[in-house]
Image 1 (cartoon, rainbow, N blue to C red):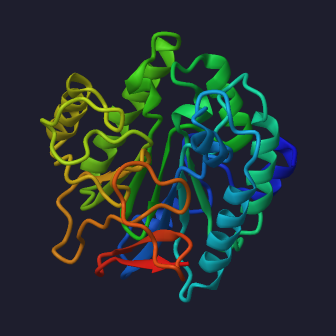
Image 2: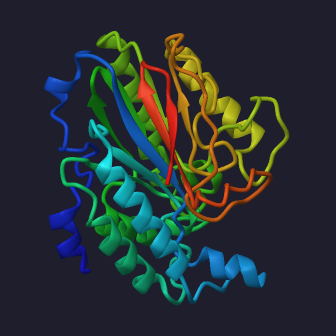
Length: 304
């Protein structure tokens, strides 16, 4: 599927927003709703991980295709329909400039094209999507293929912010892009304050922290100096960086910026795709899992 064809299927973020939702209409609370989050489909990782060649392997991704097809089928059957399906990177395994990148992208787009068109897709970049050290060229490629790498949108009175966390990991080759996102985030937080936003949620690939803001630096979190800088930014805006949500050890977590209502609680479930770290094995009849978050009702998890 070409980028032009994908543009006709995915309502990709443009102009730092997602036009699937009209902000003026969605800024007011109208009642409980829920959304679905998936993380790290990373087409090609399963083969690479199993062979111990996670850096350059990944010439097969049939298993990822099957699991993603099952996830899409399950999401399309949900009643009532979720407000949206957010898919956090890594979207594919092949890094920029590596073999199989074009093919992995085409197959993921083909499967995602089957998502019910009444369920908007929200796509979040990961390090394999823009590179461990992103450049203006790799970010531009992501934008052409999947849409803006950072943007905001309102749903049901909640402000959602999608960020490119690689800028906080290593922006040495694109400092101007990092500065632009930082300034944009400051502006978004000011808007949230002026509109007396009660709840805001951030989606990003690398979470600030997994358990505690003072935890040691790890592959799965941002460095302590960076996470505290970002947390201070949120605190100055009158917000609490809050618990890391849904993703657990997935690099694709989101954090709640404002203290959530009592009914909201953290959910950690196994991923749809490759399992990293210590996670329970699925029961024989369960092939993969999805995080299903309801706001403000108590979240549940749907097993496929």
